[in-house]
Image 1 (cartoon, rainbow, N blue to C red):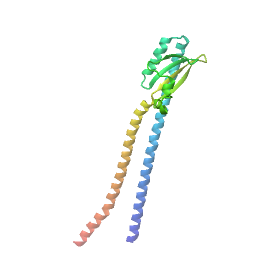
Image 2: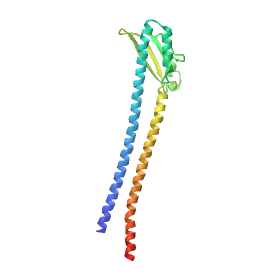
Image 3: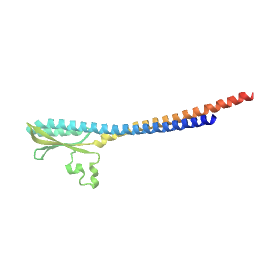
Length: 201
């Protein structure tokens, strides 16, 4: 009888240990999935933001190009460059001739890093070009260089911090589970000692 009880207890302990390992694995897996999901959401939000910004710039530049208002075009590019997400902005006519650019604007080759080893100058930057339309015809282009690296660095720091907290909670849950099992295992031993003391008396 005692042997059968011993085998049942061992089986239950092994089953509990397996379940604990499975739950730990699922928790870690879900943590990774959540982390990847956050990165995907961040990329989508950044893409939406850049598209909205350059579309608004294209709409604003349409009338200025038609009226050949050089001063307002220059003001528009400098306003765009003041955004922390924007590195520089340039406006071209339909033939690709530059009409206006922000004060610290670089050429396309410089922004793309074509003249630097491994295109290191383009790391952390993204260039978008949007056509400027008037009555359905292309009258120019707006080119904006976005500092994606700066924005993602801030978000990445936040997400990494959240991940560390998440993994810490997973580890604490695992430790608490192990301590709980150890406490449950010690209770029968104490009861047996108490019974032996009563019998000796």
